[in-house]
Image (cartoon, rainbow, N blue to C red):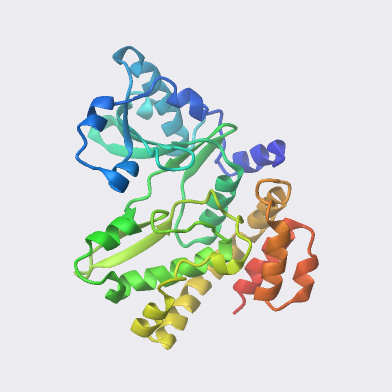
Length: 328
């Protein structure tokens, strides 16, 4: 990516500041070996267990100051530390040691005992691309702040779909609210070409404000965006689609897809200029365009248009794909 264009773009939309690097924030935190030894989990459960971290008391003030700066921009939109966040206290730090980039989950206390959580991650061009595009196109907002060497993200509520399905009483694929959310996620995944969208990479949350349990599903992993050779691989429902079609019926299935397509289309029109500017930046990213040749051929076949195979500009290729997917 052209770093000057990235900084200019993100600064314009309050997404960039001179925040601590990921390594600067993480430095000094060590695994809590005693908790690991005393863990009752084993096998795969232990492999996917987050690692509790601790830091010496003498360095806690230093880390709280860094957290104050991050919080001021992430939750307050200001590059300078705001008074409200000066007394922030880190209460827990967990490393997602099973994930590719080993992000940190940081829990903090604000004034008045308010609890908040943010995630600290190394700066990654593909993750930035995914976060920004899903923020602009998804019906949900994704709050994040970036520096040249880190991305800090507001917590998204929910549990991993794998855990949700394992603990669900009954068959989760016979819950219309949950299944409908998977159909919506499937469309978003195909639109944004999200690779590696397995059940640890999207979260499920619920509410029963109306007296009826309603679910929401949101993707959280964008590190593999565009890293697919065929659009068919960007398919959340690849193994469950027949079961879902049988449960919902084709008419309702199609209606759900049309509904979310309409919501995303409106977001696309609202943010079209900003999206086009960002697509120009993506075009200059070697990491984002690594599978460009395969994607051209795949999208050409998917949209039944041979001309797509000859689009050299990756940003233009994505724009054509978006507009074809969102056609009324």
